[in-house]
Length: 87
Image (cartoon, rainbow, N blue to C red; front, side):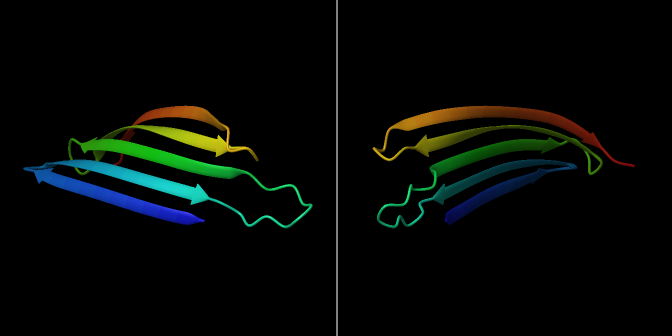
């Protein structure tokens, strides 16, 4: 399993903008005569904007790419959005 994370943040007065990217790649070793496990590459991208330290809006998406034994690829897409308020 290989994982990479990249994050970047900017503070503008009292607001904060963040960009986070994460990728995970799983490529298992295969023994002779044993069915291989899934080979997957997952990408996640999240964008967040903090209006104040207590109010934050986050939107993001993900792509999970799966490869079969013949390296044919299929994709699954996911999206998310949320507003968090703390006090």
